[in-house]
Length: 88
Image (cartoon, rainbow, N blue to C red; front, side):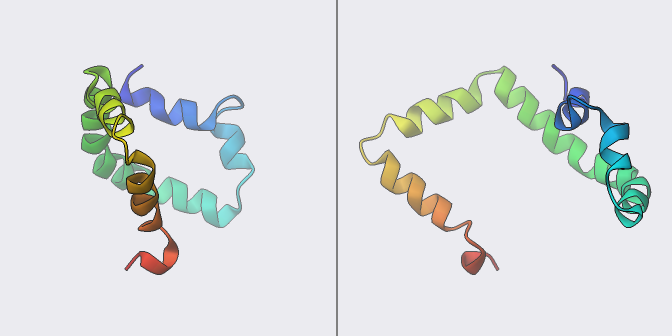
């Protein structure tokens, strides 16, 4: 799988055209207008992530993190930071 496959997977199994057709016209217009800038902005991040997954870095991070005796407490604290009241 390549970074270019991400869009296809996100809309699978019915496809991007089905997804767009089932959105409001405001969302459709926004998707068309912002597609290129959004793609260009996230492309380096997706490529970096893809390489990290392919090279096994992401798996190793999970293995190392989940092997700690206090992994659940640390995970819960990290997840707590994502709650809306903690985001600024």
